[in-house]
Image (tube, rainbow, N blue to C red; front, side):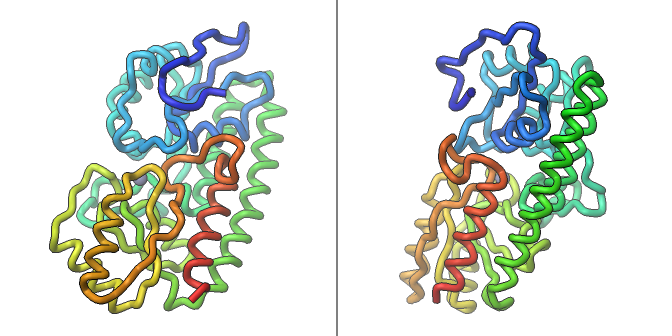
Length: 295
Ligand SMILES: [Zn+2]
C-alpha cells in the first residue's frame, strides 16, 4: 500500500489491473471500500497531509496522468490541485465524492457564499451519499466488475448506516448545552449541523485563511463564558494555533486542556484505529464526547 510522500514510490503497475488514484487518504479509503479485489488503488496524500495546502509533485502529476480513474473530494478541498484536476477531467474520468451531494445539503463558511464547505465526511449520511455515488459511477465504467462493485457498495452503505446510528447515540448522550467543539480550522460544520454541536474555530474552512489578535480575544472570551474545558488540535494542522489559545485563555483566568488530536482532513497511519473512515469517525466522536462528559 502507498503511504507517505513521493520518495520511494513503487511505480511498477500491476499488469492488466486498472489504476485507480485517489487524492486524499479519505478518498482512497472510499475507493478501497467499493473497488473490486485486484483493482490497484493508490493515494497521493498520506496520513497527516493537509489537502488544502497539498501541492502535487512531478511524480504525483505523472501518477495522475497514468491513472484510469481519479477520485477526489471536490468542492476545492484539494485547493492547490484544482487546476490540475480540472485539466485532467477533460480527457480522463475524475470522480468527485461531492458530486452526489444535493446542493441544498451543502454548507458555506462565514463570508464564503460562493465556496461550499468541502468537509462533507463529518456528516456520515453525506459521506455515504458520496461513496455510493462513486461506487455507482465505477460500476458504470467497469461493467464486467459491476456485480462485485455494487455488492460492496451496498454492504459499505449498510456499515455507514450503522455508524450514523452510533454517532447519533453517542452525541445525544452529551447534554445539548455542552455540545461545543473548538478546533483550529473549520472542518466540523457538517458535524455540528448533523449532531447538534456548536462549532468554534480560529481559521475558516480552508487552512489558508489567517486570523488576528482580535479573533483570539473573541475565542478566549467565548471559552470563558461557556466554560469550555477542552479544545482539540488536529493531526493535519500544526498545534501552535491551539497552544496560543490555551496560553491566552490561561492569561484571562480560564484554563483549558488540549484534547487528543482529532483526525480532520486525513486518516491515521495503517494499523491504527483511525486508519479508515469508520475508525476515524469513532475515534473522533469518542474523543469529543468523552471530553465533554468527563467534567
Ligand atoms: Zn479542512
